[in-house]
Image (cartoon, rainbow, N blue to C red; front, side, top):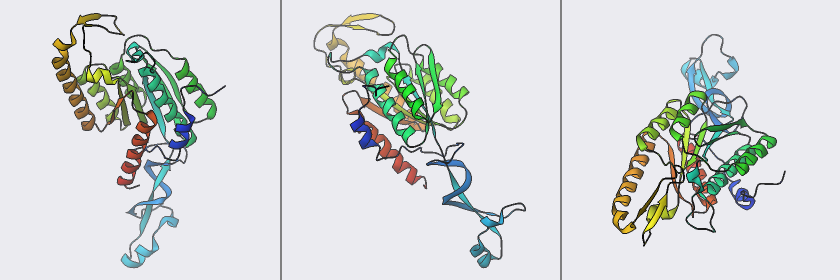
Length: 302
């Protein structure tokens, strides 16, 4: 199978010099590159604990015994592999673009998702994909090249349609996936903020490391229309003809209030939130995302 046309292999080559880290310990079934929530054998020292009958004496620290005349066991951070779930909005509003020659919101979303998947599989981690609108379609996480091609094919063949059910999708995901994972949500987040934050809180409760790429077209933020225009809801089909000059101030106030509430809630539930314009180079967005995680991992003691 040929490489999907939404992937930029030059960008992937540049990004592959960085590692995609998690901000909190994970649980995995093979040795990998990420901190585990369990203790094990690794080069990273974690802490001492008192010797208990049955402990392997090869982990005794004899220097500490020489100083204290007490037996202590050296424990280390166990490195583990990562499971990442890419949760990609495929509702009809993801078809939006403000420029006829430009890519849609979904084109940008699958560039992000496809690149993240490529980077993670090539660093030995497992990646799954959930595409959702009114219903969700899942591809369980795997870490093989064959699986990566299957995931990219699913992204390439999916067409945005239907209404978004992001809140229920995230609640269902939180109940179904209990093992700690990196959950990357890519969406326009067109829903009410309080129920969305409840869904993110649900993911946080199960100790998932949650990242959100919030995709907006710059025109949706600037609202730079100059003459009466007909607005159409891509999901419901409802339309409205209005004079932008009449609603611009109220629209701006409502949008800023919505973004402030969303960003505050994401900080509260430790969600890694990234407000992203569609005209931003996606590889620059991912570079900042990955560098922030490298710094967070080092700050966390790694």
